[in-house]
Image 1: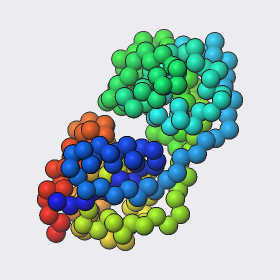
Image 2: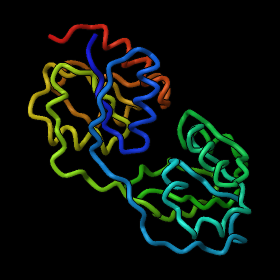
Image 3: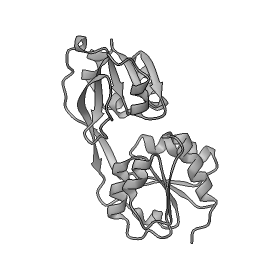
Amino acid sequence: MRPIVVLRPEPGASATAERARRLGLDVRCVPLFDVESIPWEAPEPGRFDGLLLTSANAVRRGGEALQRLRGLKVYAVGEATAAEARAAGFDVASSGEAGVDRLLGSLEPELRLLHLAGEDRTPTGAPAQDITAIAIYRAKPVEAPDLGELDGAVVLVHSPRAGRRMAELARTRGRTAIAAISSAAAEAAGDGWETVEAAERPTDEALLALAARLCNKPAP
């Protein structure tokens, strides 16, 4: 069985690695980014009906300013994000596993939402809600990550940004299979890899199911 390589930052890398080991997979973590906080000030909570959280990093890196917003309901993308919000004392009104656009499509159009986001984020489509975005964290590139593990492996790509950076840094591609969490992440990885496939759903579980299948195909 081929190894898998996880590129996402900590603590997500370790969480994915633990899920992979429970599936019997041989996993290595080579994070391409470190997540760090950005100084920010919380706006007046009364201006909003809820918080839109698209990453657990918004809770992990929100700092003291986040506490001012604890009275707002949370609309979260992904159960990991929802779990972090609950652990921090927030009331999670809704969560979805199919991406931010699908979540917003299920909500009331008149909602005023504060999106606590990363500095590098994928814009939402054309939401009916009134959304104000504030960047409160950023992904800082790791200097000279060791990508020697990629040759012959199945690489998990959790974001378009990770796909682009991997494509910039990788020296060889032909024996490396790419398992991407979304079609956007797969597209960002570029061409020349042994294979590039996107998970059926944008969840860690679906991504690992895809990786497990690819692991059983021998490298060329």
